[in-house]
Amino acid sequence: MLITHDTRCALDTVVDLVNTAPDDDTAPDGLPDVATLADFVRNHEISDVGVLSDFDLSAVRKIRGCFAAVFAAPDARAAAGQINELVAAAGTTPRLTDHDGYDWHVHYFAPGASVADHLAADCGMALAFFVVAGEQERLRRCEAPDCRRAFVDLSRNRSRRYCDSRTCGNRLHVAAYRARRKEAAG
Image 1 (cartoon, rainbow, N blue to C red):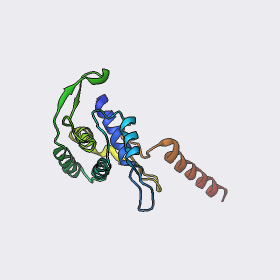
Image 2: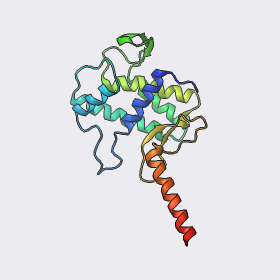
Image 3: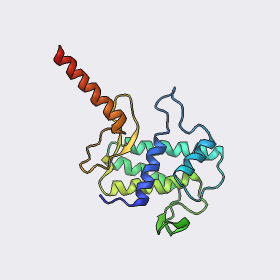
Image 4: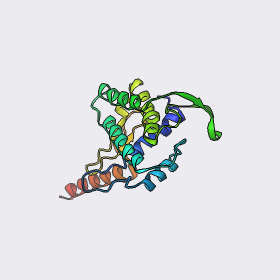
């Protein structure tokens, strides 16, 4: 599947945003305050965003939940329903732009949109492209028992199972190796 640079950046943003959500009621929120949201916006180079407020923080957390629902969708039809709601509510307005030294690319958010609408439009469209291409199953959650982080499987054969092979994948492989050695030693 050919993934444009813009789509890849938007997918990375979606994954990072979804992964800020607490895993349970006792875990801390990865977006605890407006300052952290501002850091997120800056780190992901989200353009055309004004001064952020508590309202923006609340709206982005809500959008984050909608994106998480797309990753949890059992099939493309369910994912499409979630995505359609997201991009429609954001007032998606496609337009070509070449700002800040970047080549021509498409922004899907309306001029002056809130950061939540910006994320819903641009990231929602990136997810829509995946569904249209028949690649919804690449939107996954880590299979490690104690990890539910989201990721996009961009492997050629769609075989990625863990959010990070150096941590979750390696930890499980080492545990399986030790179990086999223990069983062999018997």
